[in-house]
Amino acid sequence: MSKRHILVVDDDQHILTLIANMLSREDCRVSSALDGESAVSLLKQDEFDLIITDLIMPFMDGNALARTVRSDPHLRDIPVILITASRDRNLLKTIFSSGSVFYLPKPFSSSSLLSIVRLALNNHRIHGAN
Image 1 (cartoon, rainbow, N blue to C red):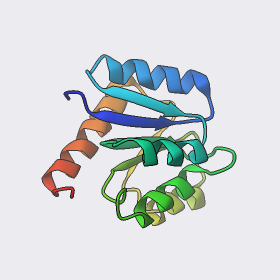
Image 2 (cartoon, one colour):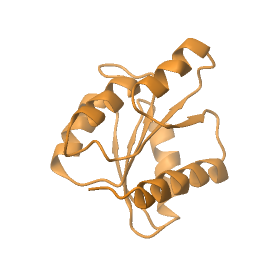
Image 3 (tube, rainbow, N blue to C red):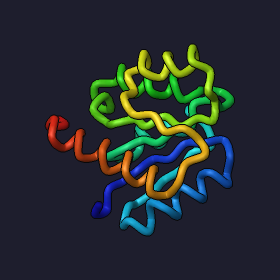
Image 4 (tube, rainbow, N blue to C red):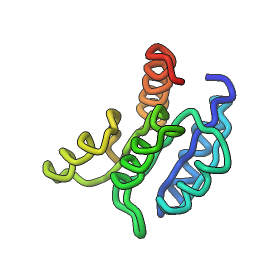
């Protein structure tokens, strides 16, 4: 990966720092937000190659953020990876109904995170983002 700009969204600062450190070692540029509303503001200010967001957050959860991204013509092609510690089957079904096609359960390893990030970025490149 070379200087891809990734937005990481999680209400847990420890998780934000952990993911940012993992991605920075892979030569990615990382921006972060503590909730979905802050993420939407950042998405309007800059260009991103990928969004990694927690599912359960205050103000705007990961599903609502993914739906917002999918409904915006300027953002809809950005891949979204949803992460969550929840194992609730009904909740997991909603992940895919929001337009997110990538999911990573917490806890996750560095290798798992980097593998799904590469998959999402490669899939995005192959399918020709606008």
